[in-house]
Figure 1 (cartoon, rainbow, N blue to C red):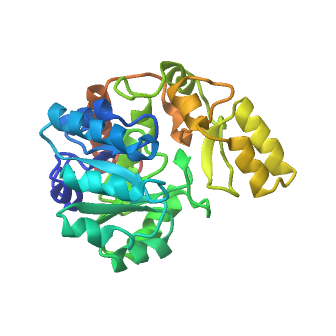
Figure 2: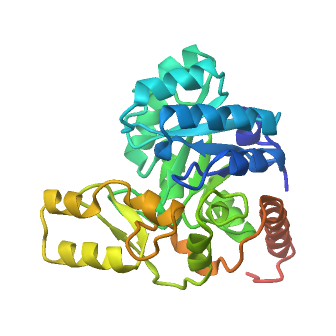
Length: 320
């Protein structure tokens, strides 16, 4: 694939592929492996205490000499401490999410850190441009983890965001193979952020039982839930069943908060409690049927992308 565009230039990477900074999945082993194989690996600060993040940053720096970054949800309770660690350790790239892009972009820029912000609407894409972020991730409804409230699909979102802003744009949500990468590029993206495919890689820190469960999923195995709190796409297990029942009868926010409790995602994805855990994964899980290494994932993404591109160029799939 053509590896020179605004995303690869901005992040100084070979391929315009970013590994999502997912809670309980994105530790130093995953982030460094993705970076070593030509993408941009991200540590997921959302599931790390400050001292844990510091450890993972330092291990990442020992494991790779390539660019890497940290994903920081802006609702994080120890946010200032996290940002100070990132600055002190000279992390080159930060992806912010779940908050205003104006909150930390200038502060990070003053310390020489490049900033990308995750959004789910054209409105917030324009806010990102006003905040002077370096790039945008537009994440569609198909994505795992926390999701946009408007439930806009990637297919509809990317062209809309592309019209709304001139910033370098990455697509996320429902992208797990080279063909979907090519589709995202055709829609106007210049790169992709991939979560679920990397979440069940060999290097992911997720529990092996969670990975095995994802491999067995099919279409319709996930659903957006907890919309009164923060929308999140969940695998349909016993915990989801109780959440769904509560939402169908119109349970108030406080009841849902009590049902969620604390540490529910850790219990599921990191500790492997497949019944009572909060199990986050994207709709693309329906096509994931193995637990490969990052090296294999990157190779497959690029080769599938090239095959699909050549099929379109030579017209073997259609004609007008």
